[in-house]
Amino acid sequence: MILVNTDYISGKKLETISIVKGSTVRAKHVGKDILSGLKTLVGGEIEAYREMMDEARAIATKRMVEEAEELGADGIVNIRYATSAIMQGAAEVIVYGTAVKFV
Image (cartoon, rainbow, N blue to C red; front, side, top):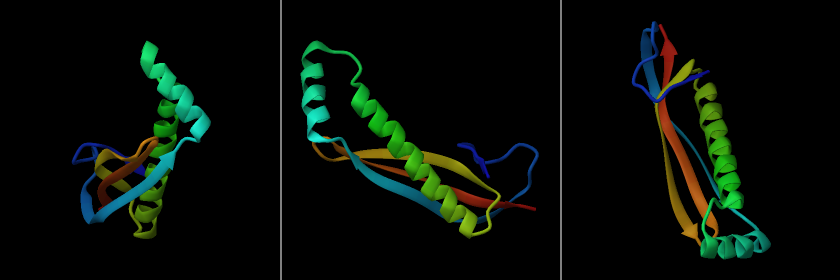
């Protein structure tokens, strides 16, 4: 499966199948949330949240790819990510794109 954020795949002629997406809502446990809150007082990267968001993007991407594979896609073009806060310490990550087949 080829994944790109452009509207084409170099050297390939594409047939559009459908929009595909994947999402997840992730949260850190309260202990890490409290420690992360203290980190905001001194500044710097909040490692626990960076890890949470990396994991969330990976899960959402995997779900999008699975949806595309079910449709028989060879690739996904125009991939975009969006994030929104659901509550303190929890975020939703959604990824979407256009599933395509090589012709």
